[in-house]
Amino acid sequence: MDFSYSEEQQMLQDSIAKFVQNDYDFDTRMKLVKSETGYSEENWKLFAELGWLMVPFSEADGGLGGSATDLMVVMEEFGKGIVIEPFLATAVMGGGLVAAAGSDEQKAELIGGIMEGGLQMAFAYAEPQSRYNLADVATTARKDGDNYVLSGHKAVVLNGGAADVIVVSARTSGDQSDEEGISLFLVDAKSDGVRIKSYRTQDGGRAAEVHLENVSVPAAKLLGEEGKALPVMNQVINRAILSICAEAVGAMEMSYKKTVEYSKTRVQFGVPIAKFQALQHRMADMFIEHQQAKSIVLMAAMKLDQGGAEADKAVSAMKSRIGKAGRKIGQESVQIHGGIGVTEELDIGHYFKRLTMIELLFGTGDFHTQRFAAL
Image (cartoon, rainbow, N blue to C red; front, side, top):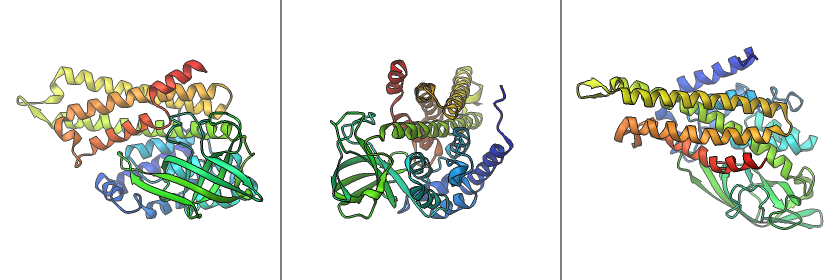
């Protein structure tokens, strides 16, 4: 079986790699992290001009294909630069929901806006009590004439502070943890009754707490079929998990390579620490962990492109493996660097923070190990 990238995928990989290398060095990233928006609007426009925002979408929706493998190529290169622009929240999650469940009018308006670089989106699904259960939804949506009235609290909404449109999951019927009765709504972030508290996360990204207090949403803003949103949510979250796992592979590669380079320059007892056999074994283990992680992400991408019942199992197997590999490589990188590895001024600690955050997003390794066993 041929696992090599196509010519188009190689060109995509090369273009992002050049951007990260030439325009996204560590100091530039740190300035963006500390900025008011938390990312570069200029970079976002560049992403649109280069067609990167078209990658997650099918040709039928005006995109470049929308395969999981294409998405993997993009996110792995983003991981090498720990890119903080909201590609995941806007193009993969928000745009993915519209592509999967939206009407032709909704797709034309929203997907077009994303690909042109003029629209920011977020997906508000997690709640303080829900943990990683997508079906645990306490936010309510009651019908009121031609509108729905939404009330509830959504937690850790990625890109929530910058989003123009927030896709909100809300319960239109059933009990709090029922799989049936969940619906999706397109909510204008500036609507009356929407309160957003944005904050910086440990890895330098941005998230928000979103409070909805009797927010009136026109029935035309219902995304997909009422009460049938859970399968669509699961499909999009699977692609989001693939995205962050591919990003983790890129971050792992840079972590172990930077650690190997550092070990050649750090001198102890009169010789570079790269000469110490114990450290050589540890760095060899880091390399093996990275290669295994890359292989399982490729497997999961192929399963997602094929579709079917095996996709969920492949995603959980991938997330479980990535969690272990990311923890191993991140911790070893910091330890081999020593005290400097946890300073704000050195990039290795920031790779570690991002790998740690990826372990927690969309379910920990332990959660997905249990999910894999149950499927």
